[in-house]
Length: 425
Ligand code: AMP
Ligand code: ZN
Ligand code: ZN
Image 1 (cartoon, helix red, strand yellow):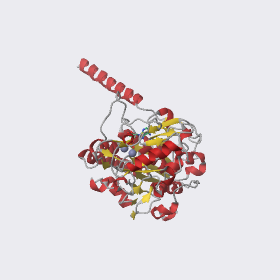
Image 2 (tube, rainbow, N blue to C red; image 1 turned 90 degrees about the vertical axis):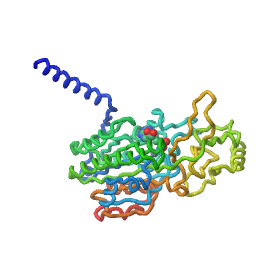
Image 3 (cartoon, rainbow, N blue to C red; image 1 turned 135 degrees about the vertical axis):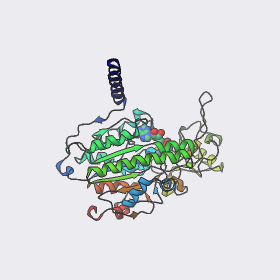
Image 4 (cartoon, rainbow, N blue to C red; image 1 turned 30 degrees about the horizontal axis):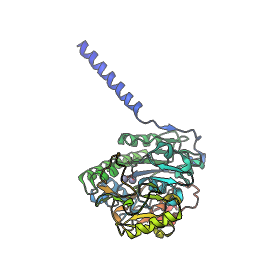
């Protein structure tokens, strides 16, 4: 009996030790001492901004995301989608959502790109560049909040690991895709239970599950249906827990872009034009001289392939992609869901077929690129249905809810003002 008891005690101890070890292993929250909330900020409401990466505008209805649809019923949503900025990829669009600027204005013009002035390359998955504030323009919402004495927290968001304008969120973490999904919600709730002086009023939360399933299995797959249900359950848990706090919290759920099924195999641009004098990153092309650029442009134009090619200065106006040299010149715009790159990998490097699901394309040509917008809470007018709108407009909307002084951006408060409750206008 005694031996059995001892065994039970030691097993319990071991379990306790293991869970402690696991807790210690998980990426820790980094706390930055930005001081207490200013008194005026303590009186304000709270915004929890959740991003479900790659959640296409029609997934909630297609796959029965009941919690998101309940949020729509209680507040506002855009059933025909929110329009991502070009290119419809993760870093540019997340950073547009929190700055109100088109990628060409905030500077994160692609997941990876080259800066000819710096003679350096930015890559989203290189901690040296993604945590270096000098790459990022604009004033992200967490910086805007902190500058005005309001505490903020980021449970992941592109740009949140950098000191931008020398300001960091009061709480943030290094990106870890494997961080348990449930515990992310728990952490957001823990932040909202902090004493008032330490409690963040602007909080971000991020999940990549739906994007990953979309790339690997395609937007129509059972795996995407499952990922949608999974993140929807997390939203349900979060929404119910926020309600139970009885605090004035607005929950806003967005995505960065949608997903389409890829067609064909790789299109290598160097098959059509001599790019040996170009610096290339993905399909971005940076020429050394006007002669090289114009020659490559003419060759690529003559290729009559599955892409448009433009000199940067002549990019279609609606793409807002002609101002920043980081976008390269000439610029390739795909005509459909095709996988395009400057070169195939070198012979000694591994190649792989394109993903089954893809994004990055012009949302006006390809509606599958459209994203989601759901919002509910004390500042949101109930039962509002929004027509498709550009994601640059989310920034002034959130700044208004938090009554923060916002700088001029590419977005306008008018676009989403119909979704604001009377008291919030
Ligand atoms: P993409 O599908 O190429 O647009 O990019 C999505 C990828 O970005 C996913 O693999 C995510 O894991 C990754 N990602 C998302 N947020 C971050 C972040 N804050 N830091 C680094 N990588 C991220
Ligand atoms: Zn994404
Ligand atoms: Zn993706």
